[in-house]
Length: 384
Image (cartoon, rainbow, N blue to C red):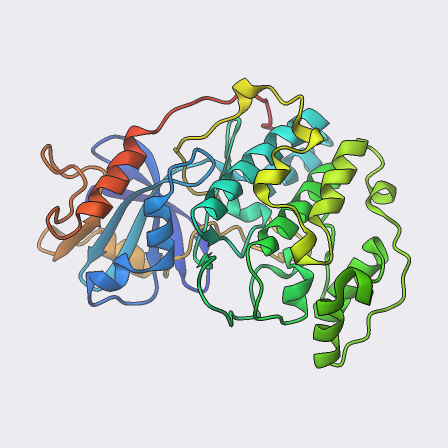
């Protein structure tokens, strides 16, 4: 860890803290995530869902994991650094009274959906999509924070408390334990609406308030539109309010017909009726999107300190880690520390990934492919 110079804390969460740091060997900025939990064996680290998923992903719209280090019983993830997250970008534009054009929103949304399509294709769903977990650098948008990611093929039940409430799908609000990848599609729909209005679509104070707001906008679900949801509501003694629904076109009058249509499809009450990410990329909303602006490789990093919204409702945390003082002390430990690189993109000439090749040949090759596939530039002018 001596090679990384701590600069500032950029996120603090339940599971850990993330810091912006400088790689003293390459002079590049990186984001260093340190977990609060202690790990005795490196096999525990290798089997973390966040590590397993990111090592396998090779997509330009998904955050790239550069290195995984285990120093004594502390686990560090090293990511490329991105200057801000989507929430900060929205906040900055709102402050400057500078709305996104629909072409800019289309560019942002294509990248988000492209990353999710890749993720779903390779068997994982995110479970916590929100503006803070979408990193932005220039024209690039990348999905980050895979701490809650699950394998699509994994067997339910899942925990019912996933995702930040405002972006939580109705099946999760109704405490279903059998949800799957459509929860990501719902979250993407709410994020797209926020790009148009600069306001969260469902800024609820609790689960009942969330469902009330959904009904007010979308109309009350029925046995014919979502029978499973009606049954879930009965189990928790909840009665949906009777609402006709004002419709997205009422609250987002500037959106095109195609934009309203794709958001309506994503915000379907019934998760089985929501389109897949692959189908969304084929929607007419994207039909005139230049192919040259479509990207499918890797490169990325974590975010910055967030602004506060609604009495500091959320603090920007794209990754997770531990207390600043403990982290700083760890970084200052001299080379006598027992440092075990689990995965590394810079270690030595013969084995630049710093892992036991014989023991972890597949992981070595996966991270090597990630590095070698790093390419592509996108021009869509989505900055402040």
